[in-house]
Image (cartoon, rainbow, N blue to C red; front, side, top):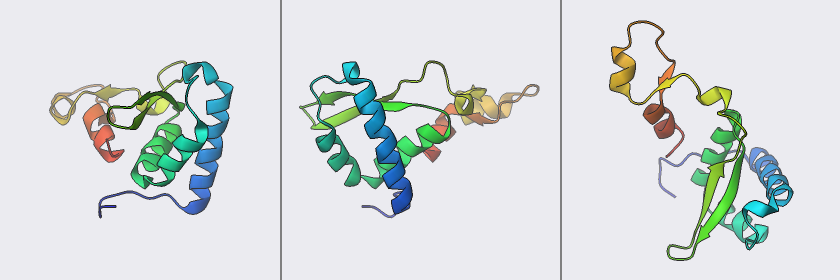
Length: 119
């Protein structure tokens, strides 16, 4: 793990995994051929991914695994919320667009938010 990785406390990891597990089994049609145990194991070995998924949850999203890529042995998560989460609305695309806004200035830019979330 590199020095810039973001880590969650153990209890928060436990709670997040329980939530993701529940969503995984509730929406099996999104990932019919995938096994939760393999996904959980991978997440436990990647604290930066857990941190990013937690950030999605905090902002009102509903991340869920939707695919597996055998070419690079990776799982793909996406936000499966019914609408754009309130924590991710009212954004400009980048810092330049944000700085150029004179009225009705958004709180943040999408690129800055993604960078903060580790993406």
